[in-house]
Length: 194
Image (tube, rainbow, N blue to C red; front, top):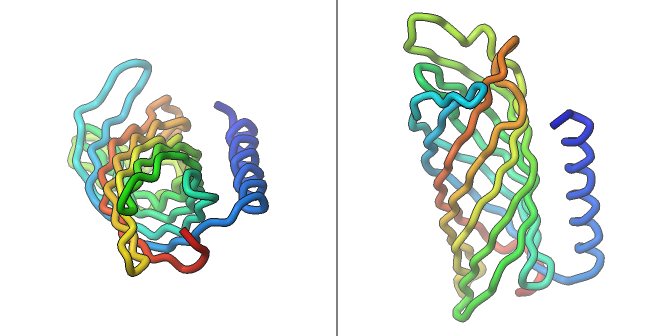
């Protein structure tokens, strides 16, 4: 996927969010999230060994009605494979929909686009791949969240996210990062009505 297509997809998501914001009432939510990642890198159909890492970050979101939500996040996340671990500040724009059940429970699927900015790299291998790491990476995150609104306006959720790499991790290489991420999300209602 080219950069122009990625930017076009980002713009389309932003316009969809803006249209929904004008059409419906909802809730504004801000929160923190953190958890674990298991990642691997792929090159031309070959897959590396997996590595475990961590993730933590901030999010702000808006619901439109009860079923649609858009989020903007800023997360520190570790990715990589084999002997190389790269840490990014990842900024995803997400939109999703789901089902609101009884007692404030929610099941929501979502997807979007994300850009990550490399902040550190470490390797335990014989060859040091870190000097060749590109400063940015583009990914497509998709996920499923189970959560619950408490009576005091606090939201607690469990999020499972698959992150599919679009851009190359290293210079002169077709290696892409892929990651499965598990998060605990805790947020607070800032305004609006549920």
